[in-house]
Length: 419
Ligand code: 7TS
Figure 1 (spheres, rainbow, N blue to C red):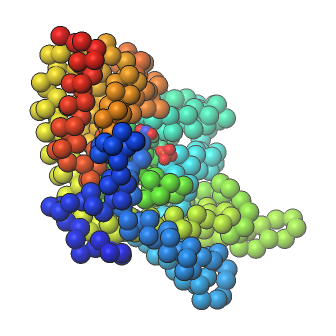
Figure 2 (figure 1 turned 90 degrees about the vertical axis):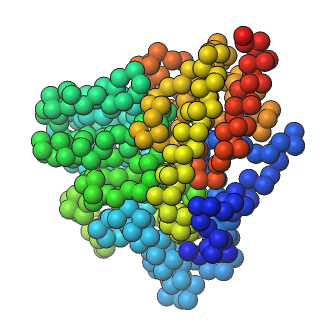
């Protein structure tokens, strides 16, 4: 691990101290209780420092300059790619493509793989839980190619129903599922879905935006064909994301964006393309943030992804226990209530208080949660909900944050004179 916090990162110590923003106070003088990590995570000092160091010490464009700082920037950028490959247990760094975020990674696959491989009448199978980012690109691809969308159903608790999966997979060319639901926290049985999809010859993309930050992910054990994530949800900066793809699939895919860096040779008439992974990285990359993402992965490695999961699982169990006391006052919790089957997300509504009002009341106490449809409008419709209030945890949260949340909800109950 790089940076100053390395020696002290363990599951036991005050992790909050590594995150400068968590020492800030709100304008009302409240301690920051950050419970919106599903939207974006906070950043440890080592990540902020890595960005600062790049711009102060070795800012240069990569893959071109022969001078020292350009070589240093290129090495750091490619080193970060290798860290991502190790973090996901990819076969090789060339299977890791830098994108802006998970959304762009999904669009890359939809345009490049989808455009080359989907035929009229083919089925694209997604789940009823998907974030818009793993739904809208497939809707547009279906329109372009005359393919059909099908949906793996969920039950009212937000658990996937796999009993009809075999018939849904008939004629299926592509399955695109989230690993963890951003709205309900449900952990999907991705390995089983991949195996059953492969049995009918379908390719599988897994949206790991909410999983990779919170649990150990092994793309080869999952046998996922594509796996996408966003750095900003896992202690890294915004504007940098990852597409993992199996080499054979990526090799066969046409470029997505084109221009500089992704070519081998160019004449006025035609071009040949660079090898993997650069074939998919047109133009100057987000160098500083890729490097800083490498530092975020060092931090997560030092903490241990098993420890992240264990910490959040314990916190979730504690939250379910504490929130139970409010259920008789009208608190409704959505998604699986079992910490084994859910990641650190709790979606709720409190009696007839609108989710936005709830979020505003909590804000006066320094508590940051999200209210709304969480970019899952079809799921909201399926569950017959207009909005939920969502609290989401990460490794820097602890029991005092859960206690603050419960106290905030009790304050809301008092303001709304709930019985
Ligand atoms: N997939 C899932 C499962 C997500 O939760 C999100 C973002 C995305 C894809 C898109 O990530 P992006 O970095 O490309 O924007 N989810 C959320 C959320 O739940 N609240 O804000 C963003």
